[in-house]
Image (cartoon, rainbow, N blue to C red; front, side):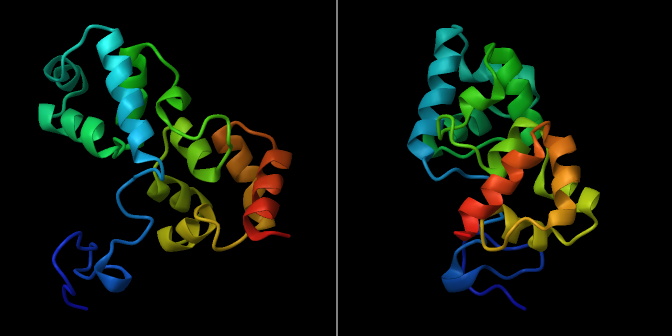
Amino acid sequence: MGRDTPGNPLPWGGTGMVGRPLQCGPMRDNDQGTTRILIRDARTARGLTQAQVAAALGCSRSAVATWETTGGLPRPDRLRQLAELLGVAVAELLPGGAAPSLRRFRMVAGLRQLDVSRMLRVATSTYCDVETGRQRIPERWIPLLAASFCVSDGSLRALSERATGS
C-alpha cells in the first residue's frame, strides 16, 4: 500500500480513509481546546516556561508548544512526567471531566495502546477498535484490563455496554 495522500502516514506507508489518519494514531482528544488550556494553565500556574518544561521532560520546546496550541497529548509516559512536574494528577490534564473511558483509564495508567495490546496478546488495531467503541470489550479482557488500569471489573463492563448500546 503506497502513500495515498500527504499528511500523517501510517507505519506501512498508507493513511486512513479519505487521507485521514486512523483514530488509533497520534493521541488526540476530542476536546483539543480543553487539553491545550489545561496544560498551559497548569504550566503558567507553576511559573514555568515552555523551555523549562521541555528541559525537565527531555523533549523540545516545540513539543510543549504543540501540546498547548493543538491540543495534542504527549505519549503516556511523558504525560505522567508532565503531571508530576506540574503538581497535578494525570486525569486533570485530560479533558472530559469525570467521564470514564477506556482511553482515559489507559492514559492515567501511563500505558500506550501498543503496551495494552501486547499484554492482551492481540493486534494493536484490535485493541484500538475496542477502545474507540467499535467493538465491545471481550469478557476475557476485563480482569486483565481492570488490574492494569486499577479499576473495577464492573466499571469496564458498564463502559462496554454503554459504548455498544447494549
